[in-house]
Structure formats: C-alpha cells, structure tokens
Amino acid sequence: MTDEKQDERLSYEQARAELATVVERLEAGGTSLEESLALWERGEQLAEICQRWLDGARARIDAARQRAET
Image 1 (cartoon, rainbow, N blue to C red):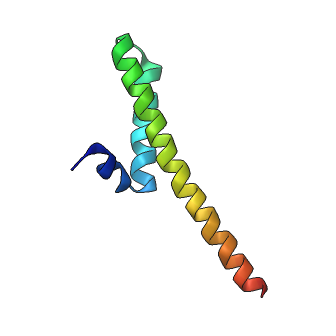
Image 2: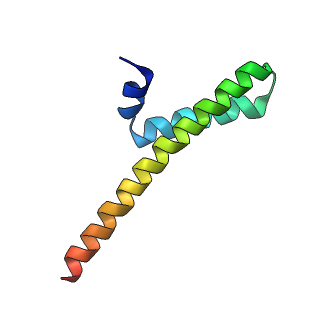
C-alpha cells in the first residue's frame, strides 16, 4: 500500500497524534537538516489530513443545522 493510500486511512486522532510527535521531534532539535526537512514535510501532510477531517466535520454540522432549521 502506498504512503498516500495509508494516509487516506488515518483517522483524525491518528494524524493529530503523529503530528504532535513530529512537532516534538522538531522542537527537540538534534536532527540533521535533511531529517528536519523530511519531518517538516510530513508535518505539513499530517496537518492537511487533520484539516480535511475538520472541514468534513464542519460540513456535517452545518448540514445538520440546516436540516434542523427546516
């Protein structure tokens, strides 16, 4: 399974937890420039996954509110 396919299967909680780990590693320092860049890129991917989940949740809430108003 490709990394992209695996990322599509991550839950919000899984992506957020991995993102927190990435941030901790970046904040701790001690990594090479190349590793830091790879961590940063992974963090960006995980942040996008989290944002998609949040956007989807917001859309569901908005839809439920609209149904309740009608």
